[in-house]
Length: 491
Image (cartoon, rainbow, N blue to C red; front, top):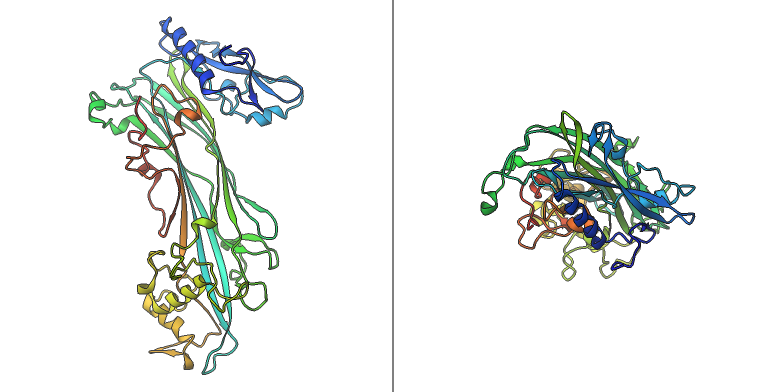
């Protein structure tokens, strides 16, 4: 009565009554039960579900894991009791009122009695890096003695890469001597959206993997590691995957045929399409872009002995999910002097939509002057692969581009008679989203609320959240706390 719910029928959808307090009550009960037994392996209680005609989903009981081999056993990693979970909304939408007894639902944990001496799930980390490159092209009608620039064309190229990491840990000093099988069932999906003449969505190829690992023996953390704060690195088992990706893709706005669209550059039959910012009256704008990510994770660990497979740890999480607006992270850091190349403001006399922004003007100036003129906010010169001369030095690229504007088409010893020229400097902004769910206490890690807390402020690793960089993200997830003691470790 303390929780004002019926423990024989705990609603989980659409209202979620399964709070951390309810879980603690059930967990303590399981721990007390386990303390009265001499069983080597923990007692495991798996939830059973039902639904009513309105689609409300409930926990209506628990059952022990059992197979023909006996107590707390499964037939192996493919046992139906270990089947991939569903979202509660999916179960709600099923016809009828019966829910199969072997169904698992993300976010509703199994209850596993506390037993010391076993390795456990320890951390989930994810990093998504979105790269946006701005390219410019200048055109002229003739290459006469006095060149007249007639058009400024623009192109945005986007790519996205993801890394996903799962970590298991033997926090006890001694090796675990038996065979443990680890199954990681990871499903992630990413969507890119924008509001260019309406809402548009591009769904990346969903990422899904079911990976099985076997360890024997599992090294312990070593004697006295708690006083030193340095467990044996071999006691951690980090598993890293490459997640959803978007290959280099050109953004095609709604003003042009086939737009809006993200067109992979490797699928183009001809050079990527440039879009005019000055000659057709439409201009070119970068609409509001969003990135949405959903994640579903299931991890279980089976100890194998002569009597079969025994569950020693099981977690499944609906999350982490996230959504963010790209544009604020493309905004220029300098809004006073307007020297940045991502500045979308218009200088006096350059009115939207067909005028050139401060950013476009600054990108042209940097392309003329070379690497030493790159603004601090952008960090470094990044050559456009189509700049002429291809493969030339930065100085040669800048001189060739400068000659495009000079009477007589000469700059020093360099001549440029092209009718169109790509700005050799093409800045790229990297937007990195880092998420980590870390276990605080090895025996407390079954709800997202147990682990979905940012690392401590004195962490030596990057903090979760969104960060904008002007250089490629090169640090692998294993350097983002995987394979070492959690920032949150404080049982």
